[in-house]
Picture 1 (cartoon, rainbow, N blue to C red):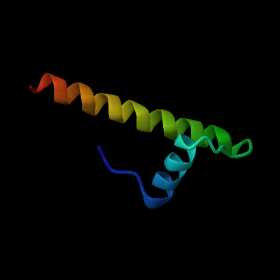
Picture 2 (picture 1 turned 180 degrees about the vertical axis):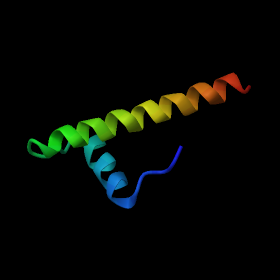
Picture 3 (picture 1 turned 120 degrees about the vertical axis):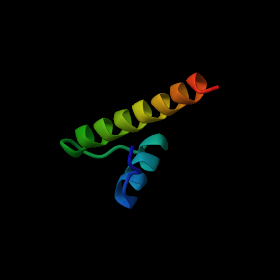
Picture 4 (picture 1 turned 30 degrees about the vertical axis):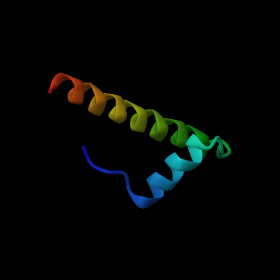
Length: 51
């Protein structure tokens, strides 16, 4: 799993702080945040399974 680009990281950080973009860019923002959360949960699950 690759790390997000600097631009994607900034967008994720803004999303977590509650700042949202105007449509249609908001949909891209929400999709990126959902992918970030899914990756995080997968990493947590893999960590738990490897214990």
